[in-house]
Length: 372
Image (tube, rainbow, N blue to C red; front, side, top):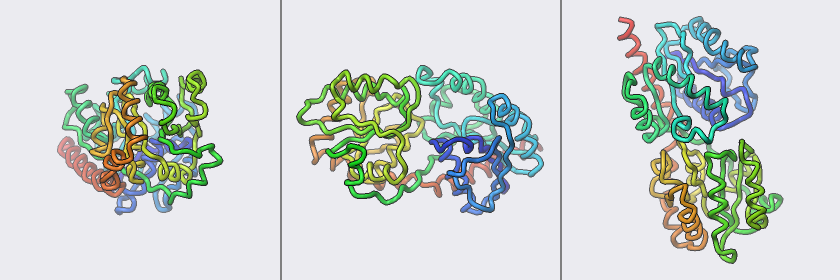
């Protein structure tokens, strides 16, 4: 089977979708699939695409040029390479692929429908304009979670076939270091951990507000890890205004070694997002045997399983109460954590690649029926 993959997300600095695409490519190749990766510009070297995988790149960097590449150049490359199936791993498909090429698209979330106020205007417009055509063109639509699959079916009842669910894997982080490694970050006390881009959808304003409701003498610290997103410049002001500077630490982006150490030594993960298509930090924290405080919405209950305390992300009192119990009641915290590693073990890139190969075969069969 020859698979063409849209690699446009591999051109920028490593991020969640880029890592997803890179790890999926590696796992498919490891199972013997013949993979061709297409990107509008050079692939970021940090992604380390394995040798032996065919990669075609261009010089289409500005947004208008990238749009031209996606609808004209990419389909020509795929036809020239005679791929049997084309996979859009993040919400996009070329509109003009050769009729004989099967097509599959993966949808990670429907933020633009359920939480549009949390998105940048450019991203929101792109999702509104380009997701529906991709869904119409796809022989098979794939979602990361059952929650997203159900939401897709509800929002778009005209889909040609049922949405398939193939959960992503999570990359194994390095072995963690000693807790003393966290000293330079100013972390010297027990702490809860947040991991993710600092953006409105992550609900950090409510998490900080909930933290401020806790009794000062009993609360653990809160460590917030992640690069700056948008509309989040007031978070530091919120922390200062609440007199919480000594207890809430912003680390910015950290490398995988430090991230592993932060997971290994935290009391629990605090991630009461407004909406998630999957929620990788949940699985990462559980892979270190940690319990999770997360939301009772979208995919988060499904991914977290029984190893989480679920809250309404808009209820700061509920977030505060859950945070307080997880930080002060070790017996409760340890009970929630039982089985966390086993739950995290469900999500491997081998499983994802195996599921996607079955999807690709299904799409090829459907395309052949259409051609006939």
